Each structure stands twice: as structure tokens, then as C-alpha cells.
Image (tube, rainbow over all chains, first blue to last red; front, side, top):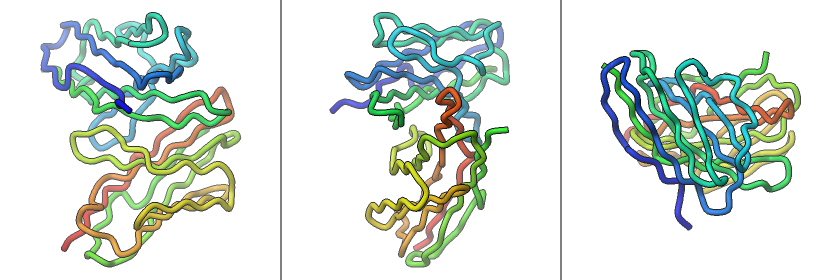
Length: 115
Length: 110
């Protein structure tokens, strides 16, 4: 079974530029998550989708971050404009809906460096 | 406030020296507790899901246990290839929110 795919794997941009990340979840997984992981910290949830709808985006900085999940499959996360503090690994995860507990499976992440 | 705390932050063991990692949590209702392994430059790799107090799960040299306030990841006779950061996460029943700890960085020396 193919895992969660993410691209690009690495990105270096100047501050105030924009950047987009792409995620393809495991086939059949209805729930998709975007996390931000700063070096030395645990992942922080940015946004959670179930199919096409947003379940939780309470920690998404909406003035600069946006995310969409078209057709309930692939998702993109965008930052515009980027700040230095956005330098982090952006992880995408997906989970099947099996009862109420949602075990998440992660992709390899996109490493973003903002200069 | 819902939160997850892991200890110690870092742990150095000799090969074969067993130990335990701790994950304590305060959430408004626990749906599930998860353990992940994360190698440098990679995404977290799923290890275990625990659902209720008293539950235990094992995989090779790893054993995870759960009480009402904390979980332990026991590592028996570790090998250098067990070196990684181990992350704990909880799913709260309050809007199904997820919270991760900061991880324990394990280094097993030969």
C-alpha cells in the first residue's frame, strides 16, 4: 500500500515570498491533516479535513496560511507571504475513519527554510 | 488546558540497557493515545494506538502501556537501530483534537 506522498521535499524562499505544498493521502483515507513541526518540537496541528470539509483550523494563521482539499483527495497548503518564523517541516498525515479513534499515518514532510 | 508532556527530553542508553519513556497527558476525555517513532529527516512512523487504561501493546523490543494519566514506552535490551525520537500524541474527545508531546530523543550506543 502506498504511503502519504508530499512534494516538494525541500524549499528555500525569501521572506515575503509565497510557497505551496502538496499532499496525496493514502487511498481511501477520508481525513487529512497538515502539521507544522519546528526543530526540536512536536508537530502542531494546523488544519484537519474530513473529505472536503474543514473539521479544525483553529491553529492556522489565516492571515497568511490557506489550505484546500479538492474532491476529497489531494490537498495543498499555501503560505503567503512567508515570514522567517515559518521555517519548519510541514507534515501531511491521513487517517481512515474506523470508529471514533483516528490513527494517523504521516508523509515524509516538506522542509521549508525562509531567508 | 489540554496538553501532553514527555520525559525525559533526551535519553542515552548503552546497548542492552532497558529503560522507559514517559508521556503524561491532561485532556478532557481520551479517545486514543498514540506512539510514533521519528528518524532524522523523516515523518513520524506509527507504532501503537492505546484506547483505555490498563491496555498494553508490544512490538519487538517495545512495549506501550496506558494508565488514566500517563503512558510508558518500555524499551527492552535496546539496539543502536532503536535510536530515534519517540513522539506521544493524544486524541481528545473534545472535538477530536490532537495534541503531540515534544518527544524523547533516544540514543543507544553500541
